Image (cartoon, rainbow, N blue to C red; front, side):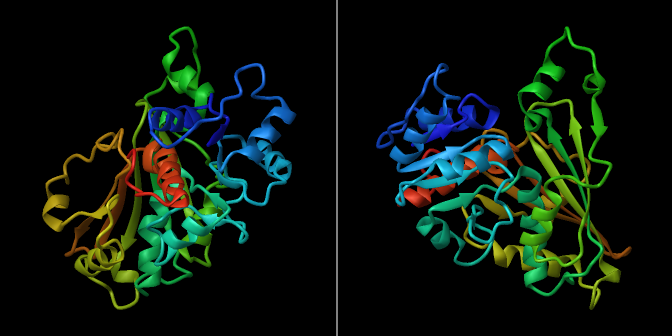
Length: 312
């Protein structure tokens, strides 16, 4: 396995999860060669599976370097997330997705915000509870590690002074966030969702929230119907779980975005006020786990034909 970009935030997380695994030999280039095109090309063509932890343009430049038809790739960037020639690397996304990932040569890892959004929206669209043209809104908060090394440094380096010294801020207010189209496509929506991301003063963790006016949906579904559709979709899944109404009620006063840090798990909650016909659906997970490196390892396991839980 070759991690192209192992010195980045996602690459380091993947490296930490793989370096002690038996049955996997890691190809390392070293600092003097990791940006050398010929050395990278050799590694990409030699590895059984390469994991690209690179910026979008660098990923697009890496793929043409591969000439070996047996070489397989997981790309963690946004470069190919809506490309029909690539397999979407979210095993729980749709029936049969695991088998597609296991057989694929090109797998694109979901974005962190997109992973939570799609996990909520797609099952409801598939069940016919959410119209494909519904004016969907998504609010999300991530730990600052999602912004990579530069953003991490701006939060953690006491010598730096910038807007990121604040405890919380919204961003992407031009409403062109790079995950938005990925969310639309893989949620099965025709209408572009209104997506408002934000960053909190904590390193890891994420909450993605989708508010719904239940009274405005066709048939005015109850919260129990929404929860049942999600529960049916993820029934038997190891890493994605839909919590009960009792578990949701217990967290009404406080939902912790850091509660699943260090895991590959995602928990989905349905908070509702039946009398008002309103609900908020939330997904909680580690933006560097199920939202990045954990998901990549899960896909890698499937592609190698081993238990997908291995190392997770």
